[in-house]
Image (cartoon, rainbow, N blue to C red; front, top):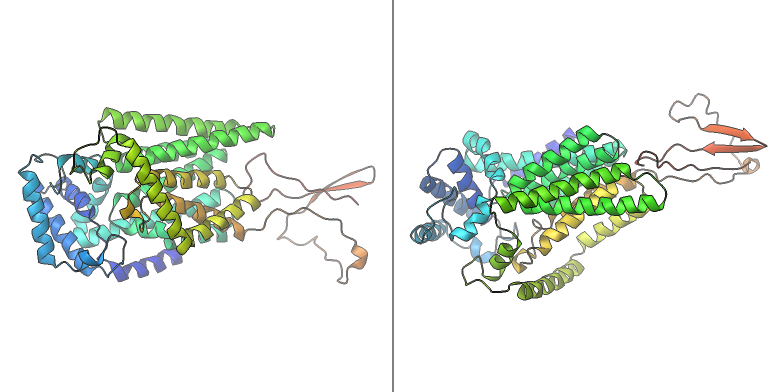
Length: 452
């Protein structure tokens, strides 16, 4: 685990700067205001960092670095953003923690995400903006990868499967998004803690599991409440479907129902909390998309055009996946794992992937077509499912005629590496009971029998 982490740190040292997106300055100015800077100075420092980062980013290094933006000089960038701050300050945006880079309605989106700026405060205060943001991203990325490892181990997977999950998390876009100075990475790391908690709930460790699920979603509410709502709702839906399937199979659905009830209750609390705090909701998100960040008048009924945008976005997205089929291949391997392995982590990973698709569906912005950050939870599915293929699948003993064996019999009486099989004899029949397959939920172990 430490070797994987050290290798990741070494790779990230090659790109300490050049990661800032257009939204980074909003979070950074919020964090600097929390650390004691006045709003004007916080905005100035955030502008300096954003423009310097834009100069140091290679062309197309990250999706939001277009060739046009990369060709803008630092002085021109600083002048443009300072002019924007002066304009919006003079047009009513005079309150809040973030600098007035845009109109008040658009900046209210970032005002409703205090968790990530609060997380940045100690890093920026101790190490400055450049190294502070980089170290904060590193902590977020490594924490998420460790949660993935622990999730697989808690589900009963082998150590090598857990390490493969950690490595996949850091190598896939989940690691890239975690390192970017945006709230998506911290939301993702908290999401992996929620996933770990759900697995512990299903493995009959209710106190620890419930604490991780509730704590993770509460913190996600402060970081990105929309993603917290979607994750909790997706988990509740998948668990309810799983409980129905278990009832049809005449198995005990109680642990799954408890997990579904907890996630459903937390989803309701997240929605109620955002509503009570008057934070932007779905209608505001649709207007933001269709009015270019509220720079045009609101539409009386935005939903017909919003669904047109959905169709256009997903058509383009599918064409891109056909051209660069990395995600489809990984999802196909994940589906194979779902069919060949029995593990409590699989329905949880499926719910996390669904939360990513729902989040992207709520923001069908063509500008995000090349990015991964809105749909990033989808990549948790391969990170959690594919490593299970490294473990041996459960096998059923087949009749075996020892008279055709060319090799001498193997004496296993002193083989400490294997668990002895239990035998029961009755009326000339020997039943051999295989150990439970790795990763099965309690009470769902399968038994294989062979008759001799």
